[in-house]
Image (tube, rainbow, N blue to C red; front, side):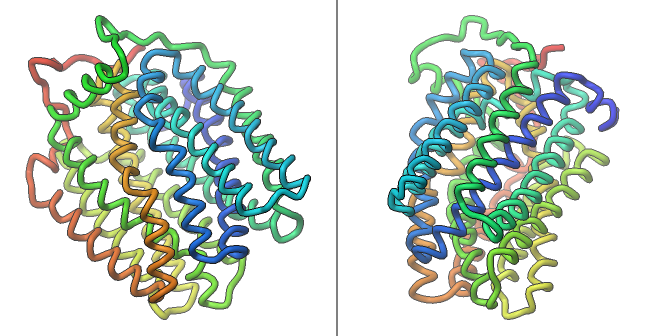
Length: 414
């Protein structure tokens, strides 16, 4: 099996291209509004921006997972692209009529967060429907390469437009990418979902997915531990614009920072497809890599030249790209098809549940201390969290555990 063979699947290829264009638009969106808000309102306003996004995102995730497991996933992803384009267009109109900048962008971030609650599980659940199980690692690798290429180009595109034009032009460009993505998704046929007898209200649907998660120690532990890991990781992300600013650099350097991280993730994603990690070693490699990410982030804040910081950004990206291939492949080949949307939503809720307060705490901590102190505290807790995963054998076993309630069966449709 090879990445070329996976790319040869027509509908998978269209999905990956649409996903890449969507992520390119999203990366332009986030880098442009993040820079404008951080420069206009400082660390606290930037923290509010991230919090607004997660407040829109988190409350809808579980409901979105149920929707994704009931409706055609292609249709959910397509509708999300169109709605997001409409929301961003509304924000452009508000800015043209001189609405207050930061409140407008906070509301925009909140609404986009709500829409992404549907698009994210829909796309994560759709990919395994379009490819044979034996090609999942290669398909996820290609997806990682395309997404990280988008995230590499996005910061460069967004900061370039900001430097030579304005935020409004950035947002208009975003709208075009969302519409183009929707147009490509419309050419992919709907894939039926084999739900069997599984159907109920929201509580019953989520209960079924949570029951499955509890039968998989690696999945349950991963969701639980990364509740805390991502809390501290979010505080680190809040510090990036001010890390750049502390070195006397501007928006273009911020764009380069993001592009280098994405380039590293692209390399890591490619490595994950060229030489997939065997199932029995996935967990061990995953936790080693994520610990390496935490240490790399600490070096971002060290008093070293910017080019040296970029080396650690590249390392962090390579490790991150590789581990995302591992995690997505483990999720895709271990979760029953009719549960994928809800399990992906539970995974996302676990990762993000504390994030609405993390940017506020991070912005506050940076403002009363400095970036290095904040990063040191965050990395200490991140290392502690990932060490638990390394020490417990069942947490490192990233393989499907059959149970009476969820017997082992094929999870893919040819």
